[in-house]
Length: 466
Image 1 (cartoon, rainbow, N blue to C red):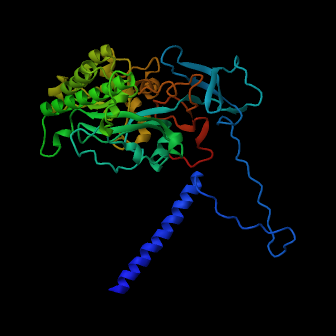
Image 2 (image 1 turned 90 degrees about the vertical axis):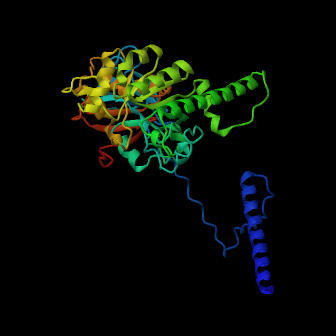
Image 3 (image 1 turned 60 degrees about the horizontal axis):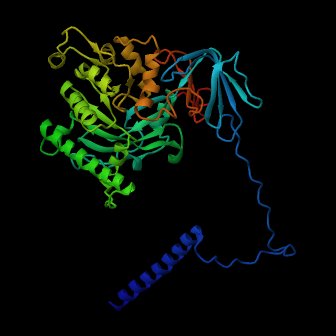
């Protein structure tokens, strides 16, 4: 017994010494500890300890277009600029890039290339902005349980992000440069997503905004929570969550304006400060006419929060006129069509022989801000462009590049990041894709992808991934 006690005492003493050493090391790294004595260096005459010369530092290669590098000029047969308003493309154009940003876009014949710029001639190929997918689950690991409570606004997927993971590398190869990585839809509110770039190695470089959205699922999956809940209870519970969260946000706003006491911090409700100040949006898993109507009337008209339709099928498009009037955009997917089953006929009142294109049905009712998503891995993330192609196959009109806009500027505006991505305009991030033709044509292919001016994918340098 005495020996055992003695050993434990020795072990604790040893751990104490190790802990002290570790603490000293940590303090030294922060510059708050006494520096350890330094042994004297051998003198030049001491031949027993020759001191090799340290190798000369190797300078990192300076790459044109990236931060700190020379400028890059890219020439192409057609450049799809797709700003929110104005001219949507330039033929026989040149794009100038410097320090990861777009400097200018214009006709090659009228745009001077500054001295020192490297020139990349893409020949007959097209250039477009990097695509934006506002519904994906491949940004990291599936290691959060979003089904604890019926509403979990405090959960964050940002802690599970794995930048430039294998799935994202394939996404890059298809020209997708920005994604909204979100939690699932097992409950009404499963947490917060993060807007991030696909092909960058460090989280700090990849993240565009965190929180990227609050994920709301009005129905479709949450009915199965615990013993089962109906829509009436879900709507009541969700509304009560919004009321509490927005009251919390107002208390903080009053405190910061000197109109009230400092509230107690509530980690679960912090997201409502972002929502109330319109710094982020609600991405809503909403489908079926009644559920889409609930989203529009409760979230947008009732609480005045920024929200967009995610999914929106099963006759949800019959509310396109209302959605357009109150400023709610539609990001369609993963379903692109409604098929003539008895269930769909009952919901839509459609011709039992008809296969309806969902994007086309929104478009027919006046909706202009229509985008596309994959819900990856439900639809493979690299097939985002094919979502637009399928929409065209089933009636979506794209005389004014609506397909390209639905892959780029529409989701960028919808998610509040159009100041950085979504179109090729001066001052924006140099996220662009060089491809062989129309993005909605599955016969065209991606050849080179740039993110922040960095060439993250090149089929002549890298193995073709898709």
